[in-house]
Length: 443
Image 1 (cartoon, rainbow, N blue to C red):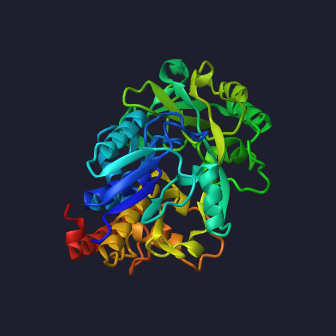
Image 2: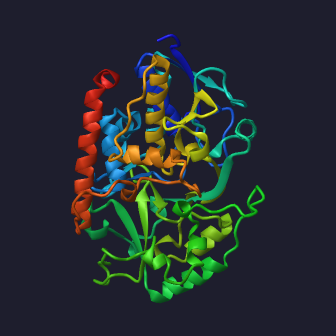
Image 3: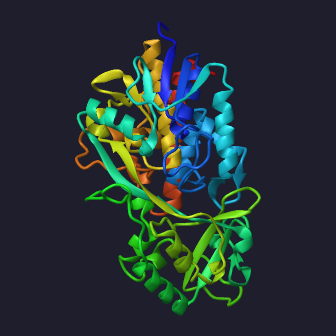
């Protein structure tokens, strides 16, 4: 291998995963991260791989899209999933982690690797030589300007938001109960905060009338990404929208009444000890005082103490179908690769998976060999194809979805059985690809 060194910019999930994959294959990596010297508005800690919007990494059952992606990543040797396994917290059928332990574990894994050198500074331009840009949707202004100039302005924006976090001791359990929807998972995976009809209607009216925080940038016509829609924006679509969305009561029964509530706010553990809880689906851009007032109308949260209020921020991603080749390299500069959410994949695990894929792609480029083609039947293969598909006319961020996969030869009506069949096909195809490239995956 003539060049055994590369630069990775950004130590989020994608950057850490990419750097680790390269280093494990003998490449000397310089990992450039502006923390702890400089942070984005959404980041708080000094650790790498900080989870901002949620501690949930979504479903872990292989018959689901998110679970299938994780199963594929485990086959490919994902660092992020190895770390996640050591700091998981109960979350029903989902994989959720203690945020701090996860970030700490990821940081330790890359900073102690003998072939990874960490440089804590802001990268303000595209590095010379082989590199991966994994700065995420919150790319710093200086690097964004450099990217925009180099790419002819072909970058896009949208807004997304994060949900508040409250202390466990401030939850009023005379108005709450533990349960997982449909009894899936452990009995104490979620705290459920029920509302009857009058309580919900009063909450709804207050929510849609509440005052929002001003955005630091001029919003113009920038869209809000559907996957992180602020709860107040979602509520304005109709009085029952929340009851069919994040506040849906199906699969739950309030032990105090013996009946299904009119609406339910679910809280999910933020840490293994259960000292902090995240308001599931409550991404918001309300002013902090309004969050206390309006969310305090939920009976179980009338005395809630907030560890973090919800925030909204601008995200950036590339017009990847026009800019990136199939291996996530820049068409106009083949030794420069992009990874993670800046490419337009949406979600923590999707970002990590893109980092894993890009690390493998750059290694193959350095080794002078063609990167193995991911099976189109695999979730990662389908997702990377979507991101780089030049026929996509109106490109928007995309997370793992069974709708991305080619249909099965036979029609299966049952959704769970169909998901299981798609997963089995995907994993079989991916195992075949790994076997055919055994030297690449034998670490």
